[in-house]
Image 1 (spheres, rainbow, N blue to C red):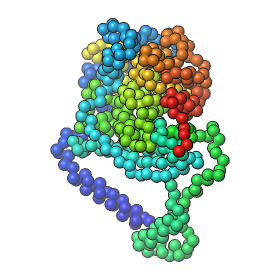
Image 2: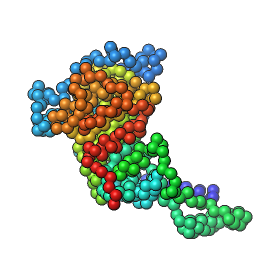
Image 3: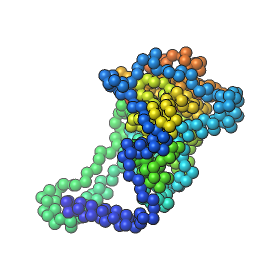
Image 4: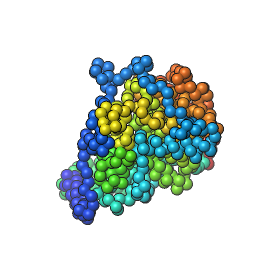
Length: 514
């Protein structure tokens, strides 16, 4: 086996070397290699920033610990009016929203918060690498492993191959709605060879091993009944169903007649500052550092999700008009950004997204703007976002209060589509750091746009300074805009039991047998 492995490794190395030798790197701009600190320093220099304020500490004993005092949490309680143009004109009609205010907000978010997608982003070509018929919790499915290759002919020193897996139930009449989820894509239950096929595989494998190492012949003769490759247990259709509390979100979706996609954000754009000259951002910049208005990782992940939706629009198993986007934590931020900028997504489940997601930037409670600008999350945002954590610079000092937009307006960009804001509780691990109240206030304030566009919001007033966040497990699910705080931790899994029927009702989708 060692000899065989060594031979395989040699072939891989030779293949890689041959491919690398085919690219004459001297023809292209030299790829910049920065660590995160160097990349951040480069952006600070471009912006004329001398000093950033440090992020708040999650340790209460540190001198720069996070604030959890509500009396200090709102240095600028008045939010920008989501229905007022920059010139002071009030928005009173849906037509004004679509033609004037929404484009104005998009421009502000692109320039100052999340960055712009460049016009030269190359084409993505999708290829189904594996199509498998599988069984998931007694539900027959078609599972596809799909790769999206980004054309890198202009700068072949960077390769981007987006990985995702699509799983669709076959025991219902299609096409079906699909929820796209940021995460690690794996085939859920790869089909196993039949006993006859497995016998042939083992015979061929033994023969190959003996040719590679003749000593193997004596070992196999010593254990004649031994089969090196064994078959996993087949699905038991007569076994009792899993208890409801053990179902994964994916199993809940399949049981409700939905499909799901898992897309790997790391194959779109690395989740670190050093990776900003790699991934899709690095490819479009030909390996050079970003400019202040260039996109960050959140926008890049959203771009990748949009390209995945391009593929889903071609798949007959999928109802492309009923595709949602989901994520938790940093991927909850990315899901909200995706939903806001791409109106083709009809549903969003935004889990525990915190600052940079559904929580107000202006709030100083738990995580702060400085945790994004001066901490480990700056690469999620546009370079210009660093300005709002600046202590000393050529333009003076700025804070989150100086931002021209805030997260209530990001949520409003999702209107009138189905948008579910989800959180857990601090006692179980969804820490106060995330500022659940700040997200609730943003959701309340966004409701005016949902109502303007003829959709229902949370069903309370839109006075974010007066409305109180409801107790956990309070269902606010009667509109296109929804809020629910479950009694679990840093996950949205406990809310799937509520999200799926809410989304199905909103989409007018009913599971039907074929």
